[in-house]
Image (cartoon, rainbow, N blue to C red; front, side, top):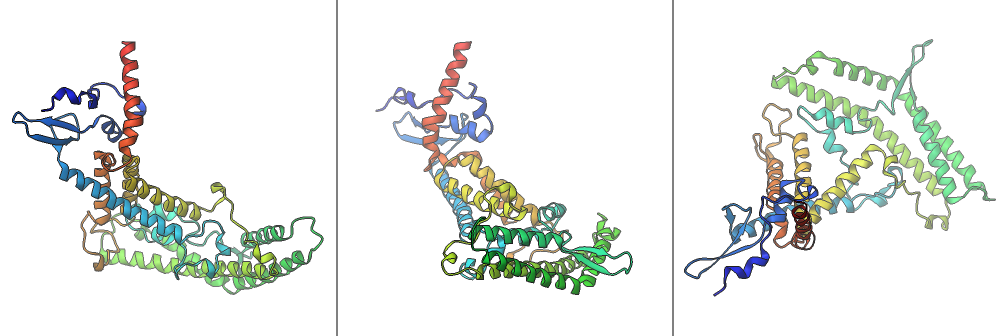
Length: 405
């Protein structure tokens, strides 16, 4: 029979010894550095194996370990597929104006978090609305009133300046500065002037409607009934939501028309190229995240965060940190669509009925369980991380502490 002393080499220092500060950031990491597989032998010689979660007497068996690994893999598969799908259905290289039909994959529009954030509800919905650029159209639809005539007009100078910059970048890409052939330069200027004239005419035709929209928006935002916290009547909440969606729909119509004109402008510039020049890809967007617009920053962050969290959970690599990141994301989702009975609009019956706890909240709690148990040590790369890096660092740290004493 085996002797207990044969397994002394797999034991770690007691829990009471200090760990390096970098390894004591979270209880999950600290737990991962001290948890080992303990093999005990009963007095009658039967082999009893257990997997201690901590140094105390509470232990879990093989079935519990398999359940935790299955939970980790299921959560990782969910996050990894979400991230992969978003990467496959998003063009991160080119600006939005260059995304014609050829950038649509399988008939799907490119991924954007805008609809998800725009439909946020609950007490913190205003925080998510602030994340969206120009959600009410005030940046691109600036109303100017002539003091003499009192007529309304829309200032589109910011948009036309952007189009002029697009024209210059396009011309410099296909006909660099100093080129002897300036035909393309002249053609792009004519195209710009044509679309600038059409854009100004469009704004002039809709100036009165846009001015009336902003007046309605100002009344809506300043209405004391909508801003009071004690408005609990269901009909008041429904009226508030319906009016907000109606105003937002009016702004979306004009904003989408402007974006459509911008894409048509970009396509017209591209049509000026000959077959040889068209072999060169359209101008790429900058790779500096600080120069991206807010929407692209959010899309990139969400997409690659989901992919990284899912991949780490599937591989069992830095599982506690990945699970905590996933739990934070799921609580973020819960805050956008809380399952509170007093919040309007209610979830459609087809998704089920929930009171405080919905499926997103359950998934967040499951991720916290994975983070607290260090499930990546079983069937994951965290086993090698602990054995080759964490345990030696702990031993070196404890040895240094002992020498100082």
